[in-house]
Structures are given as C-alpha cells and as structure tokens.
Image 1 (cartoon, rainbow, N blue to C red):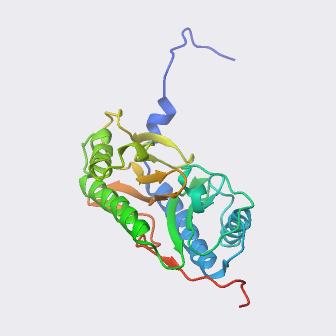
Image 2: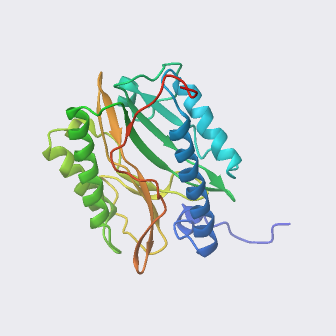
Image 3: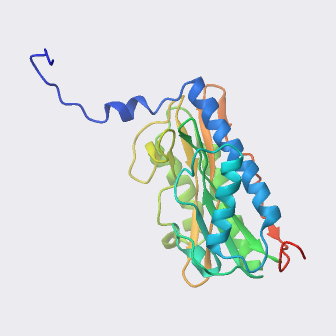
Length: 254
C-alpha cells in the first residue's frame, strides 16, 4: 500500500549510481574480460581459410560459453574484407580468404557483468595500406589513453583521438564516439563523445575504441577497456592490440 503523499520525478537516478563500480563489480568484470581474452586466443588458433563470418562468430561464442560466459554481451561482430568498413556489421556467409581484413568485436558476460573488446587482424601478409591505417588508429588510441585523467571532460578525450585521425586525413571515416562505459549493460553512462562534458571519476569504466572505415576497402578498430582508479588506469583487456598477421591454412587439419 502506497502511503506517501507526494511523488517526486527522477531522471537517470539508477544510471548515475551505476557509473561507479565497487570491488565486487570490478571482480566480475575482470572475470568476464578474462573469459573473452582466453576465448579469442582459442579462436585465433582454430580458424581457417574458407570459414564464414557466421561460423567464426559461432565458434567464438562457443569458446566463451565453455570458458564460463553466461551469454555474449551483444551480438558478436565478425566482419571480413570490405564488410569490415561497416562499424557494426552483422556476420554473413562471406568466406574469409588471404588478403582479408578480419575485424572481431565481442564480449562475454559473468555474474551479469559484460565485457567489450575489438581486435582487427590481417589474413596473410599485411599490406602497406593496412599497416598505415592500423598505425594511425593505434596512435589515436594510445594518445587518448594517455590523456585520461580524473576530472577531465569526456569530450576532451574523444577530441584527442579524433585529432590524430583528422590530421591523418580520415576525419570523415571515424563516425562514432571514442568509447562508452559498461557494466550490467554494455552501454552505460558516461561516454567518450564529442558532445559529452561529463567528467571522468574514480570508479568509472570506459572503452577506448577509435576506428577508420573506408567503404569498399575495409575498416580497422582497436578497442580496449579500462577502470578509473585513484592509482591510475586499470586495463581489463589483456589480449595484445599489436598488429597481428594470421597465416591460416585451408582447413583446420592442413
């Protein structure tokens, strides 16, 4: 029975509270990221030429499940070749082949807490163009990470990465925000975006995921995830974000 005499409207009350992760939440998040790291390592060892994007996504989700994930954090993104130019491409029956870019964006869930990471590989010997674009994205990510500090505005961090990409001539090819918070939902507040004046605080989580997407050629995104602590940044993701060339066989047994 409601006994109050007045209803007071609220806005974003729960969302504001969820910005700050406690130790139990951090532990669950780290477990989710560990599951994702381990699963990606297994995937890279087991994929082969001729697999479809759908098959790769299914195999990755299988590994996450047997490694302890309750469910994928979101629909797994596997994008190969020119499909990788779409930031949020959904897997198709396109088969991977030598010379392809392979972009994988995915996450695991543990105790309801969700991880998020993206890695972009090259199948075979990386081309000069791929190396060039990959390096620009990596520099943008590194500079943004270096700029993260308690009390800094989220839009400032976005601008740091965006300037690197813009100065390289690809301003029009980075169309999404630099990153977002995560926890019980894969997108929580606050976010690194050009218009967000929110300030970084202890207990916040953030992805840092710059990208360059060139229609008809492909796209490269590097995404790592962090916790803001009084000692500095805690990195959840451990899988290397260095450029990786995948030398795949025509079948798993070859």
